[in-house]
Length: 443
Image (cartoon, rainbow, N blue to C red; front, side):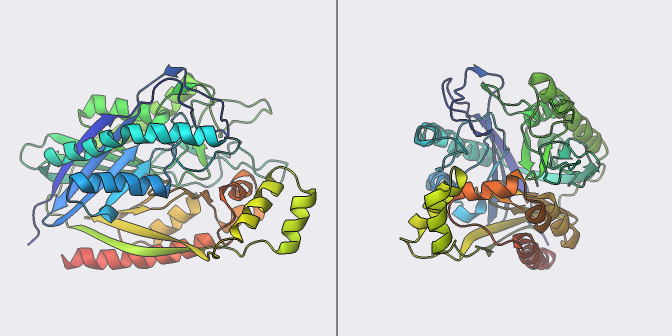
């Protein structure tokens, strides 16, 4: 017999002060001049017997491993969670502070230091949001839904040119699945909280100097106004997916890299809200006897070999810009023990028919689609920018086509993932999900 399932939600304000550098778009001179809408830390704590997990959604662009470890340690000091049972996922808004210990595309050290001060200032609030969720734990029942949503669009549109751009490819493939879990009080039927998962860049606002949650903030506010419960948003495979705006670029194509202000923000956010509300209304079956299972696996993301000495010497002597900068990072890497892979401690969470799969970067759609197709769970949520940030996690088609996401891998340090990283992730996650599912059905 299953033990009772409890859930609690919490939310705190983590809006930065004006003057804080905003990240994304490769711009280090974008200090915040206006608060368009407040940034949030939203937590969902799920407990069954001795098993407990916390899923925290931060309205940040990304989070590095160092900050992940720091925040987890702060939470562990105040609660009885295991650090690996705390998931930190980012909404990937580009209108938030710089929250990793690596510069942006053109940002500098001042950008990093400015972001560090901000992160340290809100850790107490992030800890408190978990405590709030714990204090609100309630025996629950859960309903699930999934629908197709055109909130996002493939942003690597191909036209006459061979190389992808930030233009929208309206008829090209992307992961259009929106998945929802609605938690209600088992006794009264009152809404406790809602989880919404969807993959698309939160860049509808564009490169302004306004602090904003971007389109997911509009969606959350609208859904919350109708269901009177907090929404926790998890961004899915957003690496090659932009917001589906009606902003026409100066080249005559629909832009999917960023929108043109508040109108783009609203049109994308309300489209997402419409789909989410429709799916929520259609949920009729709520179940209280669901297993909560958690398991941590070692996901190894292998690196390519570093550049050879001749190539490094050539780029240092004759290269410019990114080439020279990358060669310098390789030269520095030779002074340290060689690394063969990124070792990522990946904690998978299963709540009945739903599985949450965190990955530390901007995941391409094909990885999510393939992982879901091979998963034994009915709903499989691949989450980008979770517990770390390691550039774009691209697929082999992107490698062949190149483009921005492939080229910018050079900006994340000397080590680059192997070209078949997508196949390796899908294969490993398939095995991990099968193990988790067997654990779930044995409960």
